[in-house]
Image 1 (cartoon, helix red, strand yellow):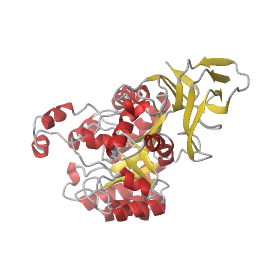
Image 2 (tube, rainbow, N blue to C red):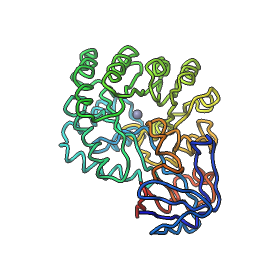
Image 3 (cartoon, rainbow, N blue to C red):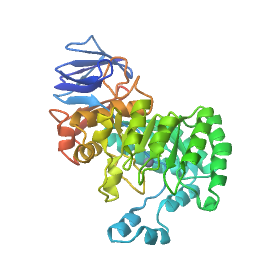
Image 4 (spheres, protein in one colour):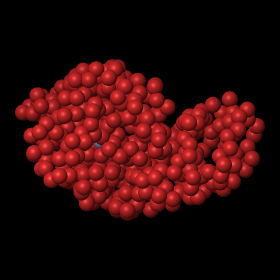
Length: 399
Ligand SMILES: [Zn+2]
């Protein structure tokens, strides 16, 4: 079925063809089923017409880094933190990632699915039409597979597109606290082959950081993942420069994420090897820290920069990409155009969907936001009040 969108004030999108921002005033868009087939001053006939009522139209946001598969929440921990409790005191009271690990292990697949479905649909409210979603709070073969099966079911049940990443290397579970190599073996010898066998993930992510997975651990895990057909990505140089950005270039990762402490050398290696730098400024804000990733330097060095929320129960509960755009503008040195590109087009590249998502172009999936705004400058400007009138996902308006 064909649908024509009329009465659009402006379409604003990154152009995959011309590789620049396009601002198209007074155009119409023709959609056939889930695909954009024409963008023009006047488009061909359609069975159905949508009156945009003077809205600005942009692509739906692509959030290329989230951890939504958890149970319960850690608001109590946030409360302890803001009342001055130390990380150690919070851990003593059962806070930290261990509480999420226990909760996921104790939840049945159906419980986890129901809870996560409600949660992921909040992304749509803020204009995100695609997310990447990681496992990583199970940390046993069965609980990681359960988390990834939940992601698969969510993708089928929600209008959102949800792209799965296996992240058994999120942290060391308590039973392997004193046997890190044992856990790396479990990941490589059992988890990754099982995930690949069930075809449950496209990507494999590792938390490569001093005190977590070392460079050698991370290399071993990501090389094993590649052998099993998974594409590597990394949590890199968040707290300290551990050389993880360089490793991302070495293993051919699609993206290295966080990068608050990345070295100039690491940035250079990423730029030379086409590794996308994904900034997660919501995490810095949520943790009450002041050291944001040097986005300006990355772009000036030739990196493609994507923006994402890092939505997770411990270090960032933000689900709004407009909020992330505001932070990237204020603290990472990105222009409005660069941040918009990072939240749409480069986000799609970071999950290998740049042929169908992240832009309004002929042949692309019809994922579009209808805004009560005059221009994209207003997206970060009206902080905390996403002025979205309507969301179209795969050609369907979500009411
Ligand atoms: Zn993360």
